[in-house]
Length: 82
Image 1 (tube, rainbow, N blue to C red):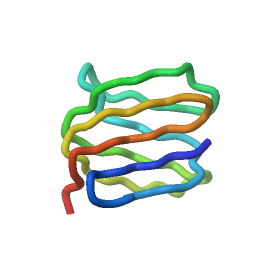
Image 2 (image 1 turned 135 degrees about the vertical axis):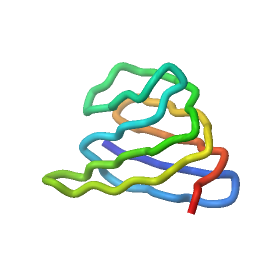
Image 3 (image 1 turned 60 degrees about the horizontal axis):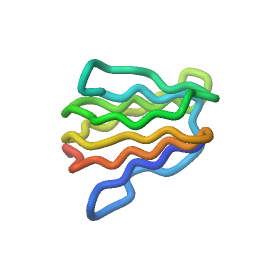
């Protein structure tokens, strides 16, 4: 599946992933392949990206929204903490 993490001024990540964990307003949740369509607000927190095997990277976002539709995940973050 495809993941895009966008802020108002940059594309932070774009690529193929096996799973993503996002900091939802009601708690963190993981998105896997063929996940049901969803739109959720996000809190400040860590987005954990897994690209297969034991490879993992993460970004700390400052709130936003996530949309999952047809194996495409779009995270619209208010900002990224460097």
